[in-house]
Image (cartoon, rainbow, N blue to C red; front, side, top):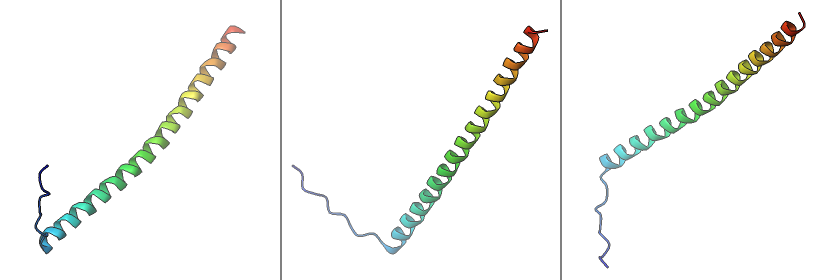
Length: 67
């Protein structure tokens, strides 16, 4: 079993860079969450439209059969 590697402490500049990277990841994940929510809302709107079109087609078929 190999001994654990000792790592040197990060410099203030390295810590700052890591924090910047973490902030960027946070913003990216937040945007992804918002896009997911918007995608679900759009999906629901599309379903509503499809349902209306299906209903319209069914009604047109019924009307055409009775003419």
